[in-house]
Length: 449
Ligand code: ADP
View 1: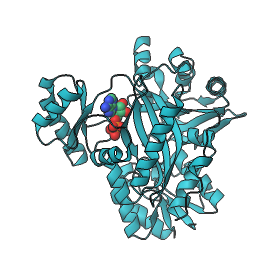
View 2: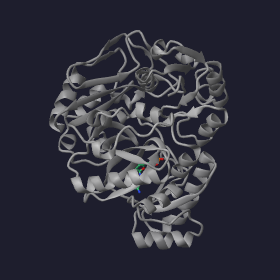
View 3: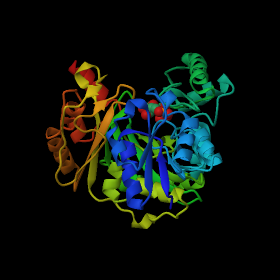
View 4: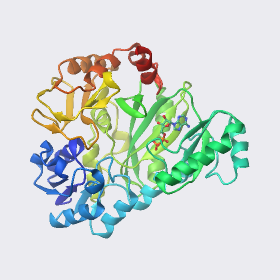
């Protein structure tokens, strides 16, 4: 096991990693920007080190400073958390070349799965269901037109190296395809330094279904079943739950097993999520693989009892997986609400500033992963998520009731948060019946105004 882990992140995930380190007997070290000098999570690290000013490009995204910080603090491994450099294969390789273990996949496995075209190829081989579409990158527009006609419109043009929803175009007919390919390629070249694009079937109404996996880096991988993240706004997940409601158990096992095979075949080490869209007939189509621990990992921890962050650290330290597939089972239902400091009544405007009131909920089955507390000043520089409320109960219905009461007892002020939105969202018929698709929240909010 490692002696010291440098946490190259901030906020709730830094705190989550600190907790995992303590239980493993590892000393946690935190980096921080000047804007985060008073970050409450820093109180719990063994050592903290400032790596630059507020803007992330000058601090949390500076590989050179992170490596220097690891050297100065005598860390032997670096945990990237999520966001920032977590899915940057160059950073993984810089860590390795500088003598630090990157807690995550090898740069090779990350690159293989991070490129959507090569990922899709590997998925086909592993028997993971993918969208019908072009075999690889588009070289000739005629080939793209032929494929699009075959699979039928609408189709979507996507950037091989895309992210954050950029470099995507929905195309509804032949005549629009050439323009869409060109503009998506230009946008992708400008944003990601690579203009490769491909075409696949576009699903109008779908649920977001994702499989949590963990690999040992030597070809073995297990899955920890699925999460449903259908309640989103502008591709940002708002509520996540596990397991996914109403999915045929056989179909679900099949897709989960295929996801674990894909991760094993990439010789992937650590936690990975294989994301799918699911249509109304419960057919699955892979979207992409996230090569890191995800924000919503706690719902899976609650229903499986597996500590995903600790397992990721153990695997990075060269230990074998501590869990066997046949020992993993699902217990009850868990729901996570992302608590964002933003005003749902004012177009989700971010709310920075001093938290004066912070009264967290509690009780059986209630877990709060947050770095916030009263007296904490939320800096304007970063993501607006200040915590996650996770609730576990025997059934989905009970988990909804328990979440609603926990949300009711959760007081944060004076700034506005997403708590009020969640209280209404969880009570909507679409959510209660799980008769929803990834556009439902946007439709609901648009109907209200
Ligand atoms: P990114 O890496 O930019 O997040 P994804 O491949 O995950 O790209 O796609 C982002 C979002 O775009 C998905 O969550 C989904 O809502 C939508 N999307 C992507 N591909 C398709 C598709 N084939 N059909 C329908 N929606 C899609």
